[in-house]
Image 1 (cartoon, helix red, strand yellow):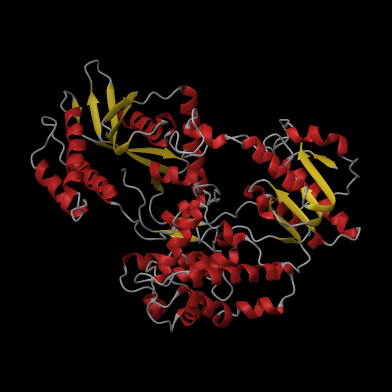
Image 2 (spheres, helix red, strand yellow):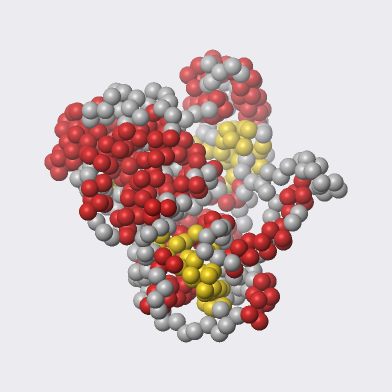
Length: 615
């Protein structure tokens, strides 16, 4: 039978109602399975069924589960002297702390030096720490203490789970399915840790780095499989069609019978093989060879789906896009099997879960002027919670810098020197060579095997900039400020030039390559608006990018200008109101706060140091 739903959310609700109806008719949940075409939809169905009290047997991405993330955050404390993951640890039972106390610890560790965890010995003396933080930090010191140097991560995690935190005892005493699934996830996680080699000065660092690499590359899918010992649980299995090969169920629910679901559209791989590399592909390009036989593969996949059900197969399709404004086309396979489908029975919908509430506002007190720059606004626009972690709470340390990045640091420092030593009569001020040499010694990759090659590239970038400045009408660089939503957005015009026709040109200099969508950058709308306020006249905005040697005018259309200005106001208003919603997407695994997110203790935070200086 084929059930028609409205939107994809309605499809989830329909599957939940169908599974519950089958259970009432005598089909155990363990004899039912929901089979999807992609991993992305598995989490949607798992969350939708759980919210409607239909038990599911689904681990999902192991390193995204909250109980595993909590263990990862504890392990990170064993190698991170800045204790960036404390923001999530402070939400765990026994370690609850106020957000202001987490910020106080982060501020203290920003300037402190010493091995990881040593700061816990004198935690009582941390400035700004509230009295309620004493007991949680003492408990944390007891839990994390007593391990020898280079203790394998799995031994630390096992001690935390089985002994020091009592997680194992709690799960064993609980008979609820969510707790038992948490126990399965932790069991999988400990087994994975035990398989890792003990490497480096801090084995926990190497273990977490390997985990992050697996998540970024999507190579941790083998850890999502539910172990055989858990199959006795009375819960609906949720898996992909590929993962169900060789299995059978009394009842199979098959959602996603739409044009973009099954059969899927043939797409070449992102890195196709060279032409003629695949045997038998004569006359075909590499991408074409990869797509050969795609229709047969999809038909085989559909056969696997149909043959997993012993007694009952229920197909589902959504007829509308998310939001319910556009129609969706059915799968090509629906017409082929239409003659064999029975009439679907009416289903009684289960009560819908309440809509998720947005994150609560975080009270922020500014003891320094509420002033930001375009980089802060860009960060907030991409993810509000990452902005809070990085800038307002000051969590985390310096990033790992490649030689290429260090070369850019040296060039950027030299550009700042040129700003401080402006000479209207000379594009190359006196002392430029010595300033570049000093910047290179301090910031450049001087210890790298290709240091000379990097220095040559840096010199070419700076020579390009000096060549642009060999012109008449140059004025001193100008620090700019734009009043927005009760605060200020700072910018800087590295070059200010009164050209021959009397128009004022302001330029921003960046060491990076010019972005493909220059007109979408908040950086230039801030520069344009702030320069117009500062100089009292319309200006011509130009963007200079030293990598690739480009100089181009930034002519923002009126509609886009209004859109970007509205975004600046919205970002500043959101920050001022304490709204820091996380933005979940494909960039998350690369975030330095990935394991700590979305941990956020209650309470308020105080910003005591300036965040922007008009870069």
